[in-house]
Image (tube, rainbow, N blue to C red; front, top):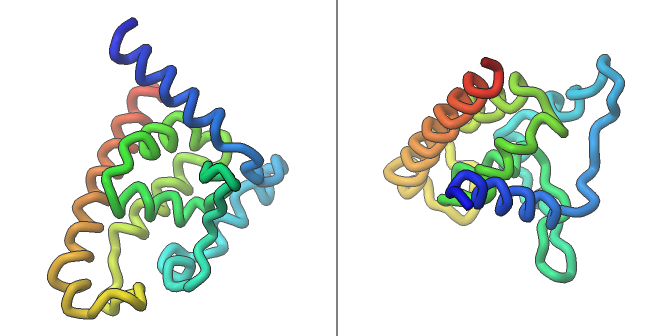
Length: 148
């Protein structure tokens, strides 16, 4: 088994572990309207995250904004791989790009209540922008590979 086959099998395993993920309606007029209506940083400032886990600790639901946040907060390589393999089942490339670029544009004022403004300015916002750039280039690579 090649490394690519192993990665594919691991990604399929991760996707199968995510159960009961709500889907948007398939009507083309409103397919992505719910995802576009909530601005990225408005949701992040919300103190109640849109992330739900099963009793076993498995991720069962996460909003697209929170998914992009998790992919750029820490080095969640498995989550990033899962995102790029499955994003077309719940969003479009354009909406995902919009969310990544919104994450890249960090606000001057810290959106996280537990983080000091000094830590946000000096360290955290820079780290988020760097990881957002990395996610953007991965997105670009995947779109070019799969569209050619």
